[in-house]
Amino acid sequence: MTVHSVLADNGIHQRYYDRLRERIHSHVGKRRFTEKIADFLLLVPDIFMLLWRLLNDARVSGKDKVLLVTGVAYYIFPFDVVPEAILGPIGYLDDLVFGVYVLNKLLAGTDAEVLREHWSGSEDVLLSIQKVLGAADNLLAGDVIEKLKKMAK
Image (cartoon, rainbow, N blue to C red):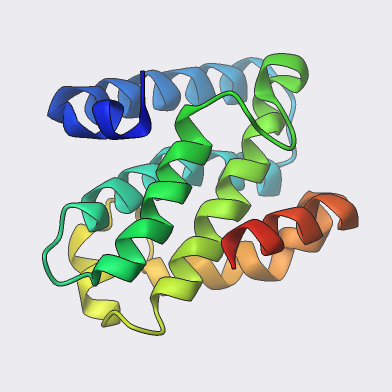
């Protein structure tokens, strides 16, 4: 299965989003994460859905869509820097940080209102991006952060 075939099926993104959301909510409810970590984990599915929706928005440039494909693929495929299959829900934090790096780069060429229009989260998308960027060094090890930054370039 190629990235293109995964992205071409309009139902897969929703099913993936639903499974991801269910998995994270289940883990957050069962485990004792700090409230701060739980809040970040709960952003993971919303960031994925925003990446997906932006990928399908004609106002986003072709160059930025390539970046968005990278972000969506990082979520979907099991080739993570921090694999959730081994670490459980904490493994989703690198997906979150990478997705936010992608969105932050996208803001250089896309109006923030486009992001707001597609955002499902409860607080402003720019505030959510700022929070994740500000906490990234505390959420992940420095070498993981550097790998993700390089991938987002």
